[in-house]
Image (cartoon, rainbow, N blue to C red; front, side):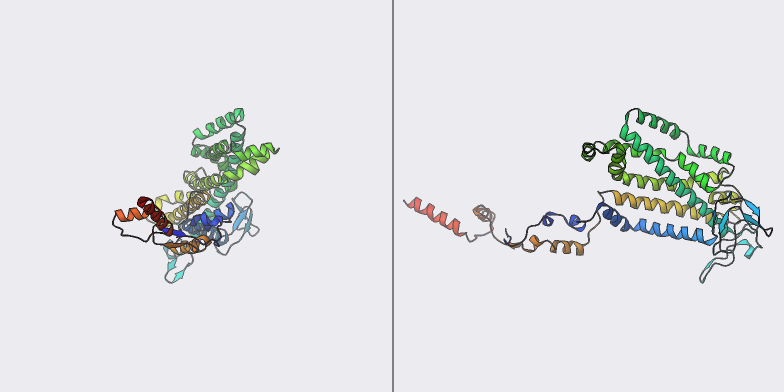
Length: 402
């Protein structure tokens, strides 16, 4: 087999690249991460569901800014929540008892779709479960995002300082981290919840975040210990960069993948931790509500009125799964070893776009006299010899005759 390539075919560097490399040629690292994340079906579906849940929770029953979350008498004598409340499109609230409708059963119907007066049902006192679940979802989301932000800040700062400076700084921070890790967070959270006396979700989320940064700090420390020995860090030191610039401008961007992924895992765990603490009575307390508190309050009615238990449990599962799927998508997006599947159509298009491949012509025939002897030996048949071979054979015949 001989391969002939025309001399006028341009030989570019792209002809030596694989199909996957040509598909991402010219894209920055950020563009590659966004591209891989947007192509992750599970992560995108979870992101859409999470956004819809956030919009539903904060627009339906409104939200309360500031205040203690406790009830107070309004100007007209009616009970109202303490703090500035932004009303929503749902006319009912989560603390008022209303007349029982449909025996307290859910009025939600799918065919035809209708919410009814109480789509998630009512308890024995007539409180609207839909309003309670939406308010509890607000509390869980608030705690989740606050835990993520506080843990992200503390974990990155302590982990970066420990991994970059090492020595006594590393020893001091890691020993303090070990002290917090050995104490179960559920125990510390229970003590804090008891001391705070059922404070708002903002305060509760901040305190949970202060207790949840240790795992992220250890991961960031390990990444910094490896990255600080790389050549680009030595080059930054030679160029006169300060320690702060090296940490935040050179090393930290290279560790952003592991930071974001583990922050999402902390946020998912925060939803379950808040629900567990509220379930045992050490989290958010009445008159304010949370998903865990709703389950705890109505756990005795599971057999007679199971909808009081299903809806808050369903939203806890939705929040936890959405954050986990988003974390999986971010992990795959930041992992450079993840390669997307290339379809047959795209592979053919990429091959056709290589100029040097377009000029390749495959010709049947031997490439040398050795190939001819090989084909004769294995029954390939006689093949026409090249002019150079004929000239050499004619010379050898003349020498034999002489």
